[in-house]
Length: 576
Image (cartoon, rainbow, N blue to C red):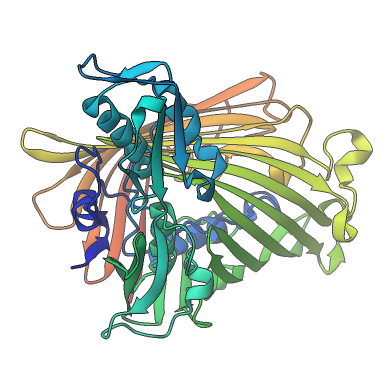
């Protein structure tokens, strides 16, 4: 008999299969942690790069999100005070010994909890309660096959000995129908002979199906020896590649309104659940004298609880300007490189916490009639430390994060032109906060969804233009045409969206109301400026193509801020 571990694990079956003690209280729930590629997007010159950056992130979300995630199955449980029942007959216990506990992690502190029984008079019911509590603590921390047992002994000595039988992994087997084009050395967090932990199983499942087209499941079966278990792994990959395209009208007058992008991704090229993709984006208004194009390459791979990612991108921009009876050919090139390493710090049924560290480098040059514009030349470097947490509630999900960015002089980075005037520095320091809340619910027999998104940037010192916080487009405060934005060193915005899932398949109507503020340098006469706007839209999917059609209006804007009284837009994305 085997235990299936697929998405939702039935812990009660584990208990029956492995003959655990009666009375264990466990829970099971399913959750998803989609892969979220993270890019450093602050090295670009003002708003020129925004269309490329935003559509690149949208393509990643479309093409690199996994079809499913592993389950976070058993809740972590804190220690509570032991309450022994009053019973007769009972025996005075002076000492509780846990034989075999040295094979468990020290942070588990089972001895500390068991020592509470010392000084109590325990009978059969009290000893059973103590064993069940210890067993539940083990399960709550993921040690689902480790057992607590008691052998016949003389309790008149005042000494109670409980035996810990560690649950270990004996072998990992592929099922006969599995694809074998995957290496387990880096994807699984388990080694033969080590303690079997549900947390390691969850992380391994997440790694094995982190990309589209991958599916993984596991079954546990008892081994020949007491406490041993085997894992039977079923892993399938439907297709090793994927293509996608995007078209939208998110550009500006300077870059061209219509923007397009193509992406080709290869999944599992080195058989380590890795991914690589190449994307190309371009403006579609070349005949107007405006041209912009970009290319991005990305590679990432998991290593147990660790993950590595490297991203390189380059954007070229060209525009013709008329000034003082002459034609000026303005062009620019921006290049970025980011290397990131991340580690899952903690996970259980309800939450997952990840820490990531990224090393960043970028360079930009702009020219007017082939003459370099020195004040716009930049060569920058830095690092970013980010802590993210996803938490599941019974009827909601919260994603939160905090990151710290530090500019450096690494890799030949140059001082910023603004440093000569005290208006910014390439060695910038700032914090970024984010919070996203998703609440699905039913009302009037209809499916609804409320989404709340908050983002804030804080800097105590002036920043260079590429690092400033800006609002006033479809990705920040909606309802504005995006031709102009409010930009400053610090700021924040909130986005509220209410979505109705219509009776028609894969279609939803939504309304949104957003508000944001910026403060610091370069915000105008007032130290704080604000924008507010609203939007209504229709989004859905048809023939492998996702679409988003919307219209919006501005509600609040500073005097002199230019924007259309009505704006509309669309976004199309296709994948195969």
